[in-house]
Image (cartoon, rainbow, N blue to C red; front, side, top):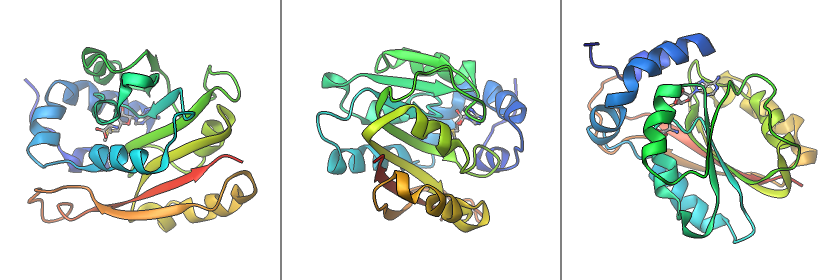
Length: 209
Ligand SMILES: C[S@@+](CC[C@H](N)C(=O)[O-])C[C@H]1O[C@@H](n2cnc3c(N)ncnc32)[C@H](O)[C@@H]1O
């Protein structure tokens, strides 16, 4: 039995291989021990902002770094197709059980994806553009697989917006996207961790031109 995993373990990873190893041992307890106990709010916030900004044409949706499918559960899937993409087969196995995804894709987001150009109508993501996970360059590939007009709604860890170069990336792609809207939200409703309990993310919203 592995010891309990948490946000410190997540923030200490450095490579895609570290992600595979960490989430292999975390998958079965991620929803109950991490998300529920800390009142992890990012997926709910993504659902809320998706409702605010999306229209019926924003489909199919790709949930990037879908993990156990918490974002999928927060989107109204009744009239939309949602696919999940993640590097961890164990996390995706839990996501599959939620019955909200049409397709489950196991892939490393830092590599070229086996997805056609201009396929998706929306990209959503929570908790994936964060310490040690994926950085701003992944946006190039996500723009490639999104069609013109497609909606992006994703969290960027607040500390990393400048530190990891998301600010520069947004400037680099500014001709390919509409002017972004940013919303600062708390990651947790109830996390007593003295270092990370009050962490924030920036919900970043734009459309591909
Ligand atoms: C903190 S979890 C977030 C999961 C889910 N979106 C949520 O909010 O609960 C981060 C996810 O990113 C995935 N991930 C990390 N690096 C990745 C990579 N290079 N390619 C694809 N997925 C990756 C992990 O496997 C993990 O499921």
